[in-house]
Length: 324
Image (cartoon, rainbow, N blue to C red; front, side, top):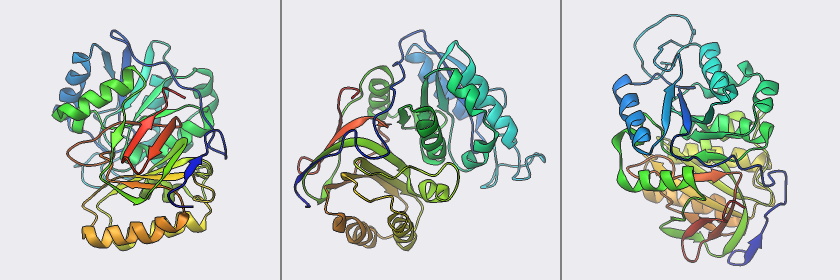
């Protein structure tokens, strides 16, 4: 019932995963671009921020490549602009993941293209390389879902290196540092769509990417027993409704323990969007918290997908459970 206590930790198909070691000063991290073409100035600015955290930063060989959707012709980076061909972007990710000196793989930006990388990855090689941290958001949801489920790891959903990290927004950077080096910190929302408390494995990501993966070999596991996290950008309310309907009809929300909603930047009339979210999610009968500064926006906090969290819609908080 809405307003009651729900505890789904360890239940369902998205059970707790292996938590890669947190980062320490001097650790080497690789910045790769699995999606859209990257601005070199912003990439360097973001890498400089990482170095200020004491990290040893290396950049993927093809991170500054530009390709059209054909994967070969070099051209200006528009909505179709990719950071090199699919095989090149996959090679950078694989090389970083399989390098024993690299402790974390951080994504430069989102945009489009991460789903195209997935068939090019050698999953046996990635699994053999052992656990390490993947960080990114937005289009990188495709990697969160695939690496998280296939390798059994938790992953880090937060600001991109050539995105908000390059801007150095102070609160977001402090929250990112806490997540990369420790257990992270609670995130506060703004309102409860449905009141109550729940506990479970955090799962989900960008709504558009989750629905795009349905019906593929990389489809997201149902959120049963877990806390579903959702956010998006530049999607009209009717499109948000359509995607939530698709996830619901696919059974993704079946037996979910709670829902945490991040930012919905540029998603049309706020009142209309609120009506869509309320109409689709309140009938689930579980706590639903909205207004978390995670996803897109002027502040972008970091959460651990695959980690256990406590969702308190009454207090408007989402808090990590100390790594478990």
